[in-house]
Length: 124
Image: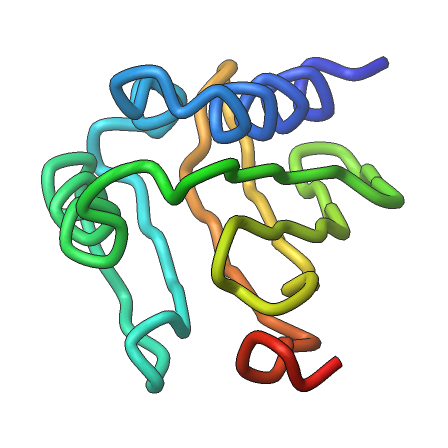
């Protein structure tokens, strides 16, 4: 397992436990995070801005939050990781792909793509 892959695995493990958003510690201080969770792709620069984004989108850990990793492809400092997550009230599994850039044991860039969004609860 490469250092880059290990960092990504630690990120997903920390996301799963959600403990005080410790996954933020894996970002480089000037890291970049691109996410579509507000309905449009937004880019956040710097660990502080990344933390604010997570806190605004996820005020508290969703009840019974689960995230599972899928396939991982590593090419040097670049890691592509498939994932799926769910929580009470989501109505199914949200699926996506994350593209990471990892350098010196820290995430310098994370681009999140949601590939499947579940319908409202009770529609599946």
